[in-house]
Image (tube, rainbow, N blue to C red; front, side):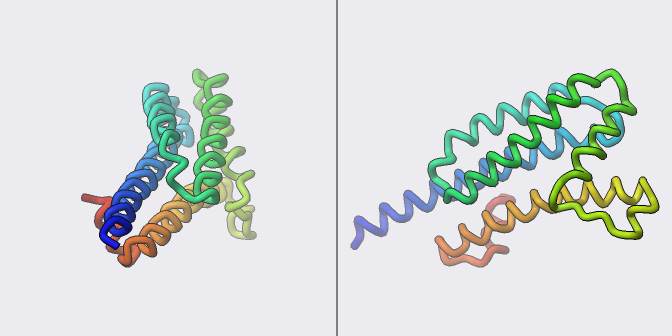
Length: 162
């Protein structure tokens, strides 16, 4: 029994680290892309986010398949937006348009009558929709880890913050 407890504690610790790295990488990419909405292109931040995703990818085998797929989907979408932004990085208005276009087209973002009549409100709702997807990924990560280590999601989140 001691063998299994020791093994479980090692596996759980590695899974915990893997989820933490995946979440950190996705959050970094979101923060690196966020300036596009104001017409700014921060190539250094995007390269750092890309590097962090590449490092986190090494840990993907330690997370559940659905979480791995969510990580790759968010990363791929972020890379696509980065690639498109790079083409127009000297044109602030084009960067803003790209951000609005890509985020508004996101499935997590739904136009409402209130946002349809006010472009600034629609853009803000779109950005919140994209960020909401990132927050859902984080909540799922915390919930799964909590079940594995018999903690509440809030306790897991506190561990991530330390």
